[in-house]
Structures are given as structure tokens and as C-alpha cells.
Image 1: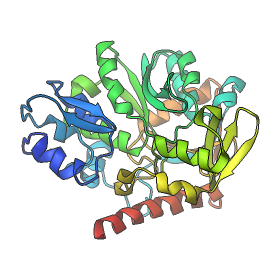
Image 2 (image 1 turned 30 degrees about the horizontal axis):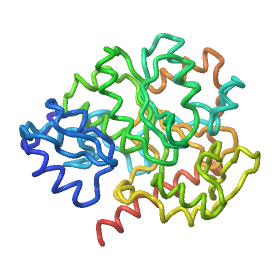
Image 3 (image 1 turned 90 degrees about the vertical axis):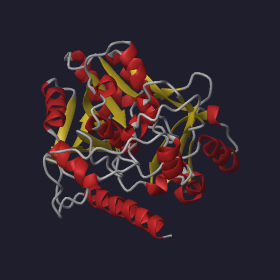
Image 4 (image 1 turned 45 degrees about the horizontal axis):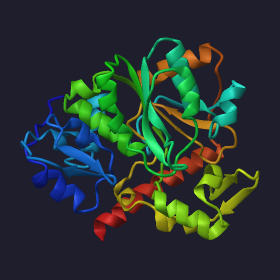
Length: 353
């Protein structure tokens, strides 16, 4: 496929005017990573120009919101566009999975599939690093991008974060440490950034990414908003919380042992505004997409590429995961369809406003 070259524009004329000032910036950090002069800084989830822009145009080429064309990206990576019946993206098969290792199940969010895939890839020498989100050592429940270098570190990063982590920023550390084969875990805007950078040929920062695991995501919430909501509704602080999970409502497990519930509708006021511009619920450009989808103790997975098939196959062969096929009447499949449509509809409403 012949790629259409974007006009070289400086940061202000492209990303600042078209993406940042319009509220569309996802804060993924791709432009910060791509700047060869290190003149972009990541400040409060926003790229900020410090110094003179050389107008090389690489920041706009890396941005998943600037000149984005889903049909073009699908054609580039899958060799075709999606068929009408593929409402949540191109894929080869779907399954429900659960980790077999109790150490994983004790710390994972649902079925532990993503954690298992990373551990299996490390132990099989498929990767020498993985980028995911970890937690800040200073602030409770604050997610931070993290480059992990061993299977044991994958356990430390298990679980879901409901505030935003700019995982793409960790690509620079991977370059500095001369990683050769990397797995990347992220939400849809992260996955889109990785694919956009691959299409742009930014091999220095992306050539070593071999596997992309996408997390299903409706939206993420402002960190300060989460703290305010938990204090207001529960009379608790973030450092009283062990973890959170969303299954229709928000379930919060406290260190006291109590599990409290907050209506999801109440949390909506703390959603990041930029999420309303994203129409991808299931990380449609990942090698494997994973999410809870209302399941208890299991993970719903969509295998999309040969790379994704390779990852799940190794984990199955090593006995690290149990899988079962998706039945046509599976409730989680219906929920996937509903959430996919709802997220796309929200973007359409935003565009018409």
C-alpha cells in the first residue's frame, strides 16, 4: 500500500491548533516520544513545546488524532478493511480465558489473561521487555507508564487502572535500554498511537514492538475526580482503597475488607473530556484485545492477528491459561456489541455538536 505523506507542519500549526486546543488530545505521549529534538514535554497529560520547534513534522505523523484514517490503518496492518459484519474490528477468533496460576489470580482484575500472556512471553524468550502501567510509589492508585523486564514484574503490574497512564512515553526508556523485542499493553488510544508510529516508519522508537495487547475501554477518569468521588460517596481516601472494578457499577475494595459500590452514572462527571472523541471500545487495532465484559473471574479476548495467535498458543501449550470458545448466546458478546455501538454513537454526537 502506498502511504500518503503528510505535509510537514510544526507543532503549533498541526497538533496545538487542530488537536490540543480542540480538546481532542488523548495525552498518549506519542508526539513527545517522536520529537527528535526533545523539545516537547509532557505536562499535566498534555504535550507542551519547550524550545524552538524545528518543524520536522514527526509529531503530527505520530499523533493518532491528526489525519487519522481507520480504513487506511486497517488496510496497512490487516491487508484489508473490515467487513460490514465485523462491528468491533477485524479478528480471527474470540474466546474466554482464565489463568491457571493462583499467584496470577490473586492479583489480576478478571481472568488474568493479559498478565499470563506477558509472563508466558518472558519465560518463552519471545520478549525482553514489556510496556504497561504500574502504580506510583508516591500517590495511591496513580498509574504510571512502566517498562518491565521480567515475568515477576508483570505480577506487580496486574490489575486495571481507571485513571490515565501515558504508556507510550515508556518507549524512550526501551530505546535507552536497547530492548530488542517488546510487548506493549494499552488502551485504544495507545494502540492507535503505536500503529500510527509504525505506519510513519518511526523505527527507532517502534521497531522493537512485536506484540500489542489492547485493553477494552469506555473512558478513563481524572485522578483528582476519583479521589473526590471516593471521599464524597464513601468517606474514604485513595490510600484506603486496594482496587476497583467496574461491572455496571463501580466496586471498590477497601483495606478494611469492605467492598463498597458507587453508581457508574455518578462517576461519569469525572471522565476525561478527550475520551468523548474516541470511538474505539475494544482496541480494534491490537494483536489481542482483552476485557472483563461483565464476566466474573474470566477474561473475554479477541484474537486479531497471527502475532496474537502466537501469543495465546504458547500460553495454552504451557498450561498457563484455560480457554473456552464463545457461544452465540454468550451475554458478554452482546455486551461487547452494545458498548461498541454506544462508544461510536457518542463520537457521532460530539462531531455533530
